[in-house]
Length: 258
Image (cartoon, rainbow, N blue to C red; front, side, top):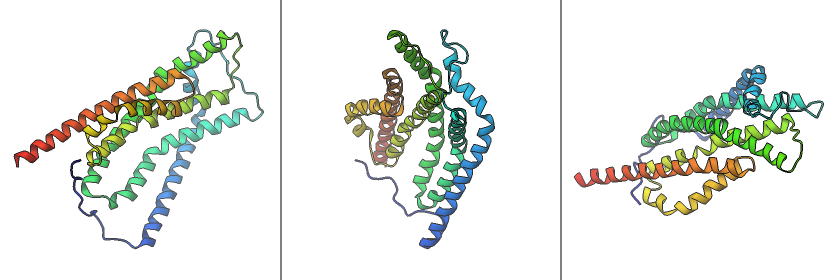
């Protein structure tokens, strides 16, 4: 394994007392909670439009009639509003949560670690959006059509509740977004010298199983959704191997040239 890159002491202000760090942590947590509250205040009035986006793939299926979804409880609609508003608010607040967390953590990192973390943050956002978009545009229509197909196959009339539908779709979309953060973690570990491209190549067989397990845990229980998630994840893993391999090769050439 190559030597760990730059181990200089953290840069920035002088070391603070422990109680000062606790006070900063308290302020960071309060700022994150305030961000979530603000995100929810923005999201709740938009709940009908957000729910319309979530149900659009369902109503694009030819055999699905209008007003297909049902609410079987008195407080069913209120429960849906809370769920959609809360998750949407959390999504809106995520950039601010990342900013406040980074502001708390960065002073304790080395110069190189700060650089790598800042460069990776944009990549993480792009992959999260890509994962959610893939889940929404590709996986959701296929998964919903499969679920309806299973009902027709066993000759059972489907009557889906809006609560179950929202849970199904949100789990899928958030699962896709979070799962696609794996390549970011791999790249950060590689850039810090903790893992190498050679080591990543050596565990390919385990990664394939791991990608399928992530697909199983992060998506509703249908095989197609798991495969749609696991496939791109493994492709991104292979890309990480090649990027780290080229980086290692370039570093070795630079070292030999000295």
